[in-house]
Each structure stands twice: as structure tokens, then as C-alpha cells.
Image (cartoon, rainbow, N blue to C red; front, side, top):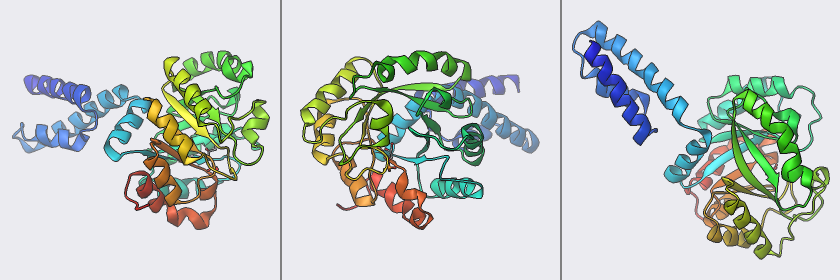
Length: 309
Ligand code: 1GP
């Protein structure tokens, strides 16, 4: 038995190191075959699943999870939820729908928070879903230990030092204390037809939508600075989404994954963003309307490459 357990740990350590996505049940099934007595067999199965999870969960960062989703499914679908809009039972109902319909992760936050209960909200989200919960912070006060990770955003399209490094100095010790994973992200506001909340609150000018070369140079600078993601942001509820040509230009120069969000309201647009090279698509406003929840599957299918454009 002692030897068998040692074997379990060794085998599982290897799964974690080489292919963190092998399911716990497959790992358990392989190992179950190694033991003959029924009771010990079941005990053994449960133990190995638990050990597997403890090793696996510790190893796989949210960033790595996103990369593996991109590798396996082509691109990653994230839904942004707003504590001011999603309330009560709907939090659980919506997150369940997200899980059932192939959403890959949940972003929580925003530039402007009118509701005072961000902490309660994020806890409710954490309890309602097993999807990765990532804070999309509108301010230092949105650092919270009940998420899995936080996009550590620097607004590199602007020249406001507070949003390039100032807020980060205040947030860094809080993130350390919370234990959540910071994912360094070059955040670029792109002109989208009108002044957005993000532009106004951050006091920074967006990149003109007809200047893809500025977007390319800015994204490359983010990559060379060691950032892990670039986010092309048209803004919440934007009149126009980021132009496909700009997404194409940035993704053809940049080797870090590019997130695109703001003003995406249908599956066809999401599919075209992926075709242009985006690796993570974010939708917020569109799914705040309950009538649109039925479109979740079409959206995730489009992001995962199953949609004819
Ligand atoms: C906003 O990119 C996100 O920061 C999502 O935008 O709400 O317009 O989908 P929408």
C-alpha cells in the first residue's frame, strides 16, 4: 500500500508537470486499475483524485489556464459582469448559464462602481461558479481575495502617470496580501465613436481608430516591457467596436495574446475578431439583458471557431 501510494504521487506529479489538463477522473481510472481489493480501490480512487486536485490547482495559474484554453479551443470567451447590473438570484442563474454554454471565464469590475457591495458581489460570484473569476479593476478598492486573479492593467494608450504606474504601487501590496494572481496587461483605449467612461475616468486620450500603426507600436512596447496580455478596449457599451484591421495589425506583430472588448454585440463580430487574430473576446453589456442569455452558446461557439463568417 505504501508503495502504491508513492506511485500515485509520483504519477500525478508527472501529470501536473506535463499535461495539467488531464482530467482527475482519467488519472483516477488509470490508478484504480492498479489496486485489486474493492474497498481499497474506492478509497484509493478518492484519495488520488484529491491529491491530483491539490497538486493540479496549485500548479495551474489562471494565465496558464487561459493559454491552454487558447491552444485547445482557438480563443477564449470571457463575460464581464457588473455588480451594479446583476443582482440577487440572477447572479447564480446567469453564471450557471455561462458554465452550461461554454464560457471560459468571468471578469468582474469596471471603471465606475455605483453599488457599494463589491466585496459581497465577488463572494457571491465565487460561490456560484467554478469558472476562473478575474477582477477587471476600476480602482485599487477592487482588489479582493475571493477572485482567482486580477488583470494588472496599465493604461499604456494614455500618458497619465497615475494609470501607468501610480495606482499600481498602491495596489501591489494589497494584491500580495490577497494571494490572488496578478496578470500584467497593457490596456489600450481605442477611439470608438464617443467619449467612454474609461477615457473620462482615467483622464487619458484613446488611440485614434484610423491609426493602427500607433496601436501596433504601443502593443509591441507592452510585450517588450514583459506584459502578459494586451487589451484593445473600445469601452463599455461602445458605439463602434475596435476595427478588425487594427486587431489584425496588432496581432500580426505581437506575440502575446490580444484581448478585444467593448461594443461586441453579436456572434458574427466575435468570430471576425478571432479571425483577425484576437485570442480573448470580452462581452459585457450585451448579456446584461436577460433576453440575450439564449445567445451565449452562439457567442462561445463563435469564439471557439465554430461559426461561419
Ligand atoms: C468593457 O470590454 C468590456 O470594458 C466590455 O464591453 O460592455 O461593451 O461588451 P461591452
